[in-house]
Image (cartoon, rainbow, N blue to C red; front, side):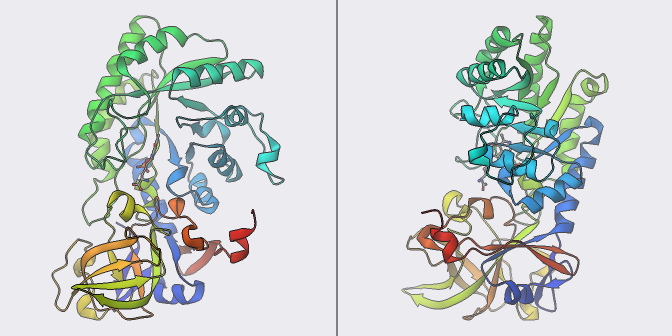
Length: 444
Ligand code: LLP
């Protein structure tokens, strides 16, 4: 699953003791395991190898430039959704043709930037070369017309895929379902057909792809199978009319192991998806793109936080930490489960077989809420959870925090953003320094 495990009651990441890491770098700190990151990328790449896919890591899940560089070194492309993410992908050295640009609200400035004509005021002095990207994932008719207009004006022909909404329920949280008819994403299958008929032969914008992304996380393969089957029918209907679709981007959404055994293995997703597409890929008719974020990076990170105070109020016991909804918002926003456990426990409180679950059957656990310092009742890391006894000053780990952890962190209540540390074997390196109060007010 990952390289975070207990030995002699102490949590380690690869070869390092995380209590020592917390003392050295302070808290709250996101800690990433390079070996885990690499392992997850490779598992996905190997499982889908028969499709020779372009893997475009979804930058939004964990956009630290150093994480991007690690993935670029493994051959990854990047899925970006803003000019800022595009900037990061370029700075990380990603080949421009391996960058896909999605998102419902691309501005004209962002589009021009992606076509290789950036606004250098926004990009700043250290801006990397702005070569044109490989593919736009288009979400609406107005957006398509805008990209076509800008590409024509700049005389920079480009390629696009249309994001199709296949109306499939990915059975995830209502805030992270994207592929049903009620969602704002993409265009429905009927409109998609007309869309291609109308725009497939534009001079400066080659509309040659179909893009889907049905939700996140999607813990089963069946919704992918349903969605892909639907868009393959569309692709075949269009082919019969002489409209060639040569690219299918099946999006991201592959789940992570928040609870032990929760996610499918890469091989399980691939076993269902590869047979649908293999023949088309082998005959050179279709190129496949994947946009995984969470699968690669969620289990590669934990959040370390220090207990500030322990108190009882009414019937409840609260463990008050220096991380909260400003550090990791997923529990508050999606009622998401993260395994939360002290980094230093007595041997009897080591999670048996490393299992991470809502309830562990161990003696002497206490029911408590782990909360942060923010002035909001939604400020919790977990509620009503059985935990080993903890005291002021202890370090607590929030597991599987690598995806949508730091990337959604805020400075709410004027807390500087946490540090990020990358561990490689016995080496720990700060990949984002902890912000200071100076950083808080610097732009004001
Ligand atoms: N492609 C598109 C078009 C997306 O919108 C997303 C995620 C991905 C790829 C990557 O999905 P992944 O492989 O990471 O599941 N903040 C939420 C998740 C929001 C996902 C947004 N889109 C969370 O913390 O669960």
